[in-house]
Amino acid sequence: MGRVFVAGSINMDVVATADRHPKVGETVAGKQVLYFPGGKGANQAVASSRLGARTTLIGRLGQDSFGGELRAFLGAQGIDLGHVTETAEAHTGTAIITVAEADNTIVVIPGTNALVSADDVAAVPLAKGDVAVSQFEIPLPTIAAFFQRARAAGAATVLNPAPAQKMSSELLALVDILVLNETELGFLAGTELTDSDEASRIIEVARRLQACADQTICITLGKRGVLALAGRDEFSVPGRVVKAVDTTGAGDCFVGALAAQLADGAALRAALTFANAAASISVQRMGAGPSMPTAAEVAAVL
Image (tube, rainbow, N blue to C red; front, side):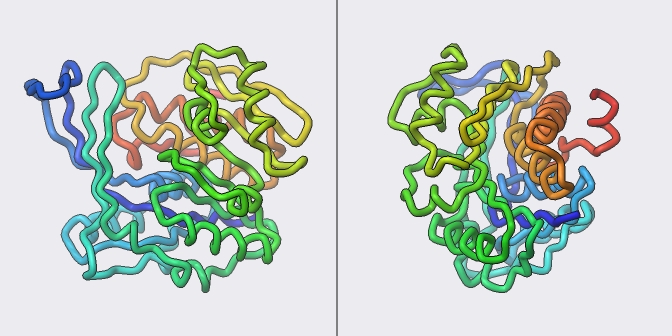
């Protein structure tokens, strides 16, 4: 069984709940404020580890109270934190999240995540059969260095290009599996897409984005499920109907679950089905990191 290495962000999520989201310039009364471990990198690592994969997280924390709390939480999830360093140069990454009507708005303050560098990924012991995962909450040159090392070692690379921003063709070419939603796909392809677009149109846009003939692009569509373009082949995984409480971290759960399955040698379709089920569990709970399910919980719904 391979291992999962996640190079990415580590945040403390400060969550305010309310009956509805405020309009611009408006103040609304909230219900409660909650503190949850988060950050796309940390969330993906938690999901992977809880689902049974040997998981290493690469990132940075500040020398502050949030940093200490996050290290304790992540260590308790069985994640290898040997490549998570502390720095006094900035505060620990923080996300300010408003949850209302089962949807969320998020403002992310990168803090130490913006300092994760190529040096941080230089000594990571990647090997053939491992899976290297990253996302866009750390600097893109760092991701490129990480994926170059992964390619040289024979490890698979999985990129979740969120929050969406333009990337170079060189970085895209280093990606074996691209996991994104339809909005992010449209942004990267220069075409507007919505969740009401037909599957055929979404796949057409994905084909235009493919960097090489054997690259895989997985498009997550929430309750509509997942579309996959694997080289020339295309298929879909149906969505699961659940009552969503908090969608924060659902995409990260999907990515971490997918990575864990791929590291275990699962075929792509089976891995996507498993990841889709895992994400459907996570949205039924509050918080990002703490909402990630175990392998037994996913097996129960499958």
